[in-house]
Image (cartoon, rainbow, N blue to C red; front, top):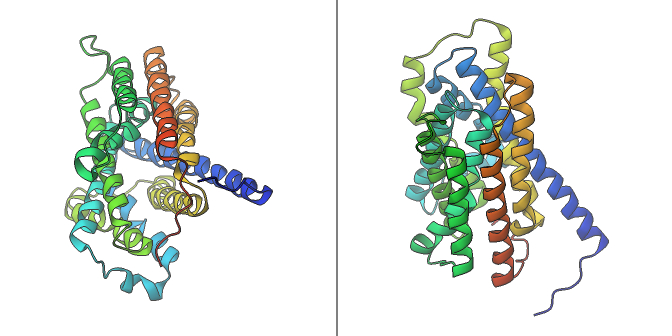
Length: 307
């Protein structure tokens, strides 16, 4: 079936959504940078930083759906799966922030770029969306890229890389559950449930280990966690409302550029040649996977959020 050629207005919309996607990954990079500063420089407990990130996310969820809709949005058709998805997001953040205690930002982000490859690998057994041999080779190539970053046997990377692998695994499960829930609940319901597991699950640990920030700047950074995460998720939703995911997906890798810049400005860290080489392999495999998805399935029409 032939698709109508894109109009000038369509092209302008896609450019705006691509810009939103680049802003989204930059905001997520700022979130990681702030979390790393709070845990390694300011010395705040990871539990406190994780909990505050989700607690400050709630006002954005409230603003996105509106106060009148917020309570109604809690009535999910699949409440158990909504809580499970929220738990996956909570674990992703907890694992990632724990990894940032020991690793550079570029290392954690490079491992995180395995996400699209891992999602493709898990979509078969979990959703029945099996990949062909070309995409399977792309997934294997991406994992070879990880070996460049991890360098097993060379003693170059801290054991905390396991936290990064945990984060990317729960992130893949979070995305797969999001895809499944799109057929059962509205986007408002899914958005409202997103921070709940983190707010409720981490509260006892965060309050037990709570350390009062010593100055106004640290307070500002702690409160800004919800801004970076909440605004990032909101821009992500806006970008996907009118533009197909395959068009936006390659620009996720803009995050490696923004994170590398942020870690240099804030911490003075420069990525190693091994990390850069592994990152290029993973990005290349991910881009090929996106290309094959478009070749096999075609470029899908934008999917409007459920009413």
